[in-house]
Image (cartoon, rainbow, N blue to C red):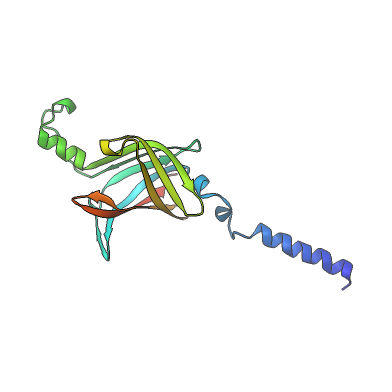
Amino acid sequence: MGDRTIRPLILLCVAASYGNAGGTAEAAQTLASRLVGHWSLLSVEVVTGQDTEYPFGRDASGVISYDAAGHMAVQIMQANRPLFASGDQAAGTPTELAAAVSGYVAYFGTYTVDEGAKVVTHHLAGSLFPNWVGTSQRRDVLLDGDQLTLSSQPIAFQGRQRVFRIVWKRRE
């Protein structure tokens, strides 16, 4: 083969390797663009060393949504929360209200993504837990196909600092 034949072949190989550098189209997308969409809850876990607990039970339900404009919202609910005897949300007893609130997490706001650190930070404009309003909640991100795992920094929960691992599945 002459120099004129080898040079185009080398250029073709180099161009093909750039086109497949990430291995998949998914790898070529940014983390921020891959977060956009609606996700359904698979599990809420509290991880302490080798122990894993399920504070909302194994049958908790929830959703998290990220939009391309940088807004997000999340809701997580423990299954089978007790009903209010009166059927009137504003007339719940202290016990009913405590059970309703302790079995539910909800907040909304904006988000930013640190691509290099693989971190999403939720900037809370509103929250069922008033202490979180105006705060930023950092979550480590693991994205594997249609499964999203968000892990918290240590958070005060039940009198101890705990790490939450929340697993989501992309909704169709």
